[in-house]
Length: 98
Image 1 (cartoon, rainbow, N blue to C red):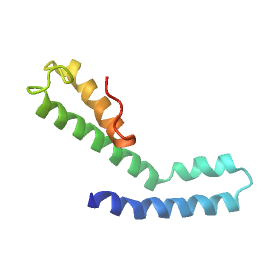
Image 2 (cartoon, rainbow, N blue to C red):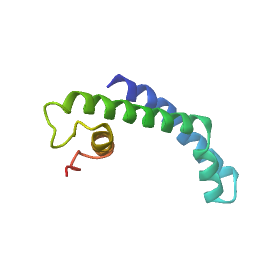
Image 3 (cartoon, helix red, strand yellow):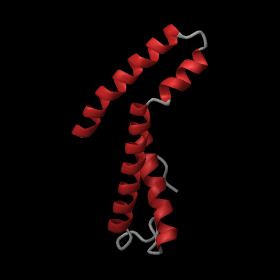
């Protein structure tokens, strides 16, 4: 839980940069696109995707023997269910059950 606190400082810095870009440029759409394409935001998105990938694999490895209904033993049948679980758990309250 400490990692999101450290990432929050990067996010607030990028948010301040986005506000500055909106003030400097005439087009809000162009300013928001250029702000989200900054290296900090791209790094944050890549870190989030890697964390989801890692957690999906860990959940599948740990749950495939005890819970084969939700996470089948077959890799391609189970990893997509684990990836769905990881995305739903990370982005909502976890109500993405099948």
